[in-house]
Length: 400
Ligand SMILES: NC(=O)c1ccc[n+]([C@@H]2O[C@H](COP(=O)([O-])OP(=O)(O)OC[C@H]3O[C@@H](n4cnc5c(N)ncnc54)[C@H](OP(=O)(O)O)[C@@H]3O)[C@@H](O)[C@H]2O)c1
Image (tube, rainbow, N blue to C red):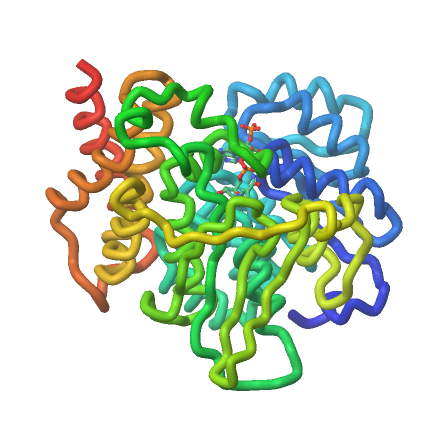
């Protein structure tokens, strides 16, 4: 961490954005564009949206733009011709971009594809603003160990984890009893299982409060998102499952809470807008202005809460069980879920099949429980690939 601007002293912070063309990435680019004097952009990374990536790189004056998908390289190269911005493609180039000297990096690639590049950034000691929860779901122990070895600071970007991070960051020390992740309940909170069985992708993509990428929006509808966040919180805050609560809060105003032994509950509130937690991480340890609407509680009038219905949303319990079983089970849960969400979006399987397939894959899988010794990142990525193969066959069988 030597020689880097981590003190918030007003020096220019060198930053890179992995997944800059996605929902989190675009919000990050917007904040960077509004604060050009404070940030120097090193690398921007996308999968294949070369046009948007090139225009972001030009707008921010980035040094380098990379597409993971080689087939998008020519488009990127010609869009950047004459700008002096370098272009590259392929997974090796993505990892190399994550290793470029920088003070801060946004990890906002979606899915397990984000794991290797994010680990590459951890190894450089770059501050990692972590949106990609799948990194912690798949390889939580190895990921946190890598951060500790390299003295790397991880700043959570998921709104719930950012809220808890802020609720824990206070002068009074000790006495933490539990943390609470709030959940909007998603678009099907009031639907019956019968109605959910025939839900279409367009129904599930209609999130009541948050505007997000399609994968995380479907995860919100199944409430697998909250399950993934439970595993994420377990690793980030080093707390066991019984100290992490989930509370359904349909207005999405309170994002997370920390409960202390003296009865104090610290909660973070704000309108549901991802630019707030992104700004918290981008300016940390200072604060910066973000163009979000002001919270008007008199206008909102009431905030409501309910317990999650785990019969209707079995994904929450599947994730709790996988968390207890260890990284291998969590990797299987995550890989099967990624494939099942894609199959649902392709209209190959029904909505309830998503959690159904995850439960069946976990029940059939052969994995080591608890403190297994094979949970290094490469073996977990191999398990991720093997699971995708098996789950792919199970999805085909269900689709036919
Ligand atoms: N959106 C939210 O509000 C929100 C909130 C909390 C947490 N998160 C988490 O943040 C992460 C990103 O979510 P999102 O909603 O921003 O996703 P998204 O809109 O689908 O964007 C994904 C980004 O990753 C890029 N990408 C995909 N595969 C890649 C690969 N193999 N190599 C390099 N780049 C790749 C995409 O590039 P292309 O555009 O070229 O495909 C895009 O830039 C997810 O882990 C999600 O769970 C999101």
